[in-house]
Image 1: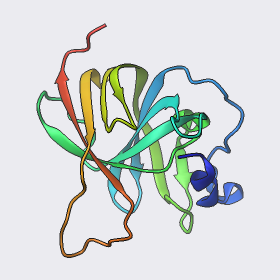
Image 2: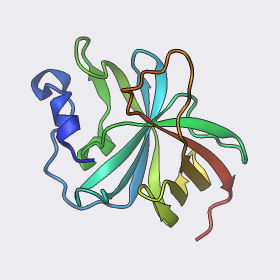
Image 3: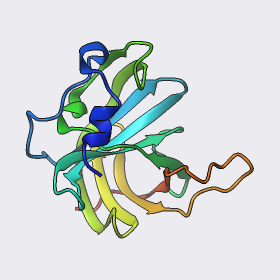
Image 4: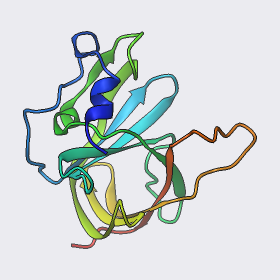
Length: 169
């Protein structure tokens, strides 16, 4: 995924969100943003190189219940479009009528380190070292959820995320 989808969904003159392009190298950071959009959710973002485009981006997931802080509890994480590295510091109000309208606040941030896996492998194992979220996490891509309301054209990628234990360095 590249930043094309991010650019297409936004009018930067109206939204106040950062344009891609000023930061070229990731700092191996992560951010969790509390997003009061249509529904309250948490946007989980990892700075990494996109395996398909080669761009450094924030790989992003909408996590309705936030990352689990207790070991073994699994939460849904819906992968969204990649965001530019500059978005890691974004806080503010995205005005109504714009994609993602609502208040965005940084809930936690810090450093992260990959232990094994990749997006393309459909499995990630990593450490998060933040003020509120600190531990070893696992994510796996599911086959999706099937119910009567499913749209066959829905290309959403549904992941599960859970805390495996304490961070290991």
